[in-house]
Length: 348
Image 1 (cartoon, rainbow, N blue to C red):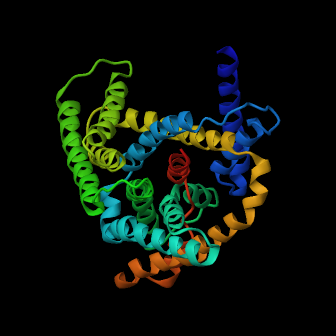
Image 2 (cartoon, one colour):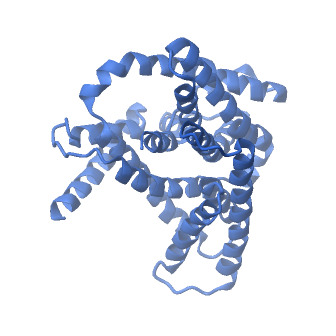
């Protein structure tokens, strides 16, 4: 146990120090965490034997709950309102189009089976603009036409829909004869109702209850976040959609403990991202990368230069968005923590 705790502490310190050093060069933090995981992994320098996908799935899915919550909690409705229609369409129709075109590319160009192609498309269909923001902010760049708000809302809200697509395709591959339309309606409907209802209840409690000092408010919010995810999942709903909506509702309200909760969950969000990508690195066996490098690169090219730009163009052109804004949004589609977790779920 002591050895495990020592490794955890060393990893966190290295992640923070290397991130601060490499941030000035615009290198995304997630790459640092993955590389550190590979260095500590079975074929790295430290050689920690780890290939337990079930454990990794449990840990990463729990971490992703808090990332989703903070994505909603940190989104300002006032700033996002002018670009809300574009953002929502990108997070829904954009995800479906990206997944579909990526699947078509993998099927006809890469030569994968239809089910495998669609699964890869679903896993890679969501974006993580947080990595892009870290680069833009480090370079002190300002985005016009409320592009920052558009990316913020899209990146925070598109993960639940990518998760839904991934689960639907996995059920299809497993031969489960569920009605896909009914499954989608249940996922979205239960997720929205539960997240909105719990958000309303949480605000009533936070505004009308005097909580003890010493972090009780943070403990209470953790309980609400876990409930926002677990509740709809138990009845067939989308827990990630619920927890994002819950965070969005609570984050856009005013209550006494809000400032302290913002700082607390910002730290939790960063720790969760470190954990997910470090575990992803641990699961990587470098000796197995070379045989699949060509295929992976081909999928990357199809996703980055065909599927994502086409999805952005189809969604944003009716809103008379400039081609410059469309290009920036299209190439700000870095894959993030959600895609990593969905990939682990698919392997498991």
